[in-house]
Length: 109
Image 1 (cartoon, rainbow, N blue to C red):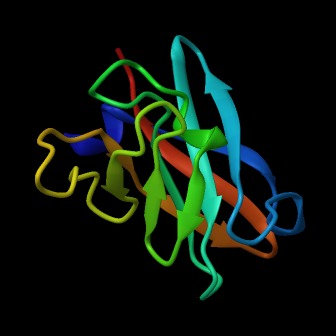
Image 2: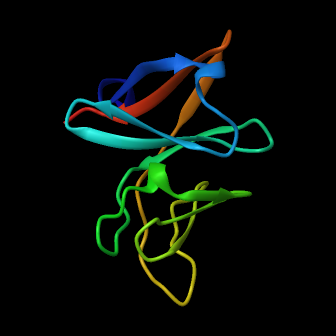
């Protein structure tokens, strides 16, 4: 069952995440880039560009996209897809906001 394969982890208060800036969060052996979008949504993706491993939490955020700080690859924060002409994707993680607390769901290895 899915309940056994997903772990819900508290990563901070909603106000800890600045609008349109990324924040690196480490959970076990994973590093996530967590973003609070201009519309208030919190999104989490793998903190590593598929191109050369750029740290996405340090990238520029525009709308629902983050630009890798290394080579300016444009990545959709909502579905993890790299935008053309570049190719690839990063893993996305479900986020939950409950009573101003932010949680992320990560697979258990």
